[in-house]
Structure formats: C-alpha cells, structure tokens
Length: 236
Image (tube, rainbow, N blue to C red; front, top):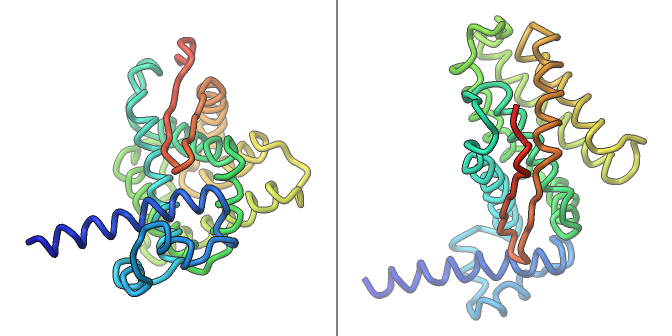
C-alpha cells in the first residue's frame, strides 16, 4: 500500500513539475531532465507513468481544455436562461480560444504542442465527445442527416480537427490577416455548417456567443490553472 501511494505521489509530482516548466519555458525548450530534476525522480518513472514528454504535454493540454469547459459550466447561472445545446457549445468553444490567447505562455505552449503527431489524435477524441453531445441534444434543430452514417461522422471529425489546428496556427503566426474573433466567427460558421443545415440558426448563435464571451475574463496561473469571471451584463 505504501508503494502504491508513493507511486501516485511520484506521478502527480511529475505532472505538476511538467506544468510549471512547460509554462515557463514552453514545450520545445523543456527537456525530460528539467522535469525529472524538478520532480526529484528518475526518467524511468516518467516513462512508466506517461511514456514520453510528448504524452505528458498533450495530457496537460487536454486537461487545460477540460478546465475551460468546467469554468464555463460553473458560470452558467450567470449567463441567464440557457439550456445546453448549440449556443452553450459555441460559448464553451469560443471561451477555449479566448483562454488560449489570453496568456502568452499558454499561447506558446499551444503553438508548439499543436505540431506534435499525438496532438491531432487527442483532439479527435475531444471532438467525438462534443459531436455526440450535439447529436443527442439538438436532433430537432436540423442536424445534418449525413451524420447518421458512421463513415461520414469519422471523416468529419478528422476534417474539422485539421481545419482548427491549421487555421489557428496560421492566425497565431500571422499567416492569415484576421483578428482572432473574426477567425473564430468564420471557422464556427464553416464548422457548424457541417453539423446543422440552418445557416440563419448558426449565424444567430455565433453572434450571441461572441457577445457573451466578450464579457469573459480568464486568469491563468503559472501552472495552467484557470479562473473565469463574467461581467454581470453577460446575459442573453
């Protein structure tokens, strides 16, 4: 029992050390030695618990994404009457982009981690979760009937993940002359047009989501911990 507890403590120590150093130095300049030295452990244990630096970084990034969603969920009561559905999904998705670009260290981490082969695969897993939420929650709102075909569903996940990664890397690197919020608007319309057949419905929710998220303020600690405050007038 004592060894199991020590193992959990070692895993958590590695995870926390990696978060701190990735925030300080970015992914590219962080070495495995940096992490294991800070965690006061051995490389073999990092390999045992996480496999590689890449796996550890992607796990931290996925947890960051989930934390954004949780923060928005916790503030749902402050946004007025809003059942879970397309609008709430857009607000969470837009908040994710805002959080990414709020803090220079997080933006750098995203720019570097998004180039890793494992990153796209992990984003596919998240896309699968959110696509299924949409299909279950708003079937009456004009869901694209082609999504009932599993092959198309899988194709669409792959297509939209690739779109997202490339577009926002290009925005970040100034390869596209677009402000972030305009890029989000355009991406949203194309992305959600694959899911829903009613363009007016998509446009309406894009505008609402932009209005709500403009009143979000994120604060991110030097270990990727997120807090969110919402201005009182952020009601629909």
